[in-house]
Length: 113
Image (cartoon, rainbow, N blue to C red):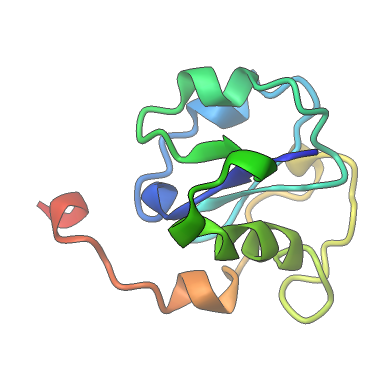
């Protein structure tokens, strides 16, 4: 099991989750963060500090947010960033691109005000 970041993180990027992650498995994209499914140890610390409540255990992701399970996984694959499993976000820095579905995600009016 792993945790998943959903759409309420897009254009928010509070980063509280990044600073508390004991295994450095939360990677930064231009508009959101992504949790590496193979590096996450399922500790849940990130959930408790996420202001927009954007992090769920993969088996508890709300039905309408289920595509974000694949989005988080695919972010690391060759067709998106090609990051693979670098073993820690701090060693690679911010990615230059988001998952294509995140990149085209409409900006929320509430986040822009």
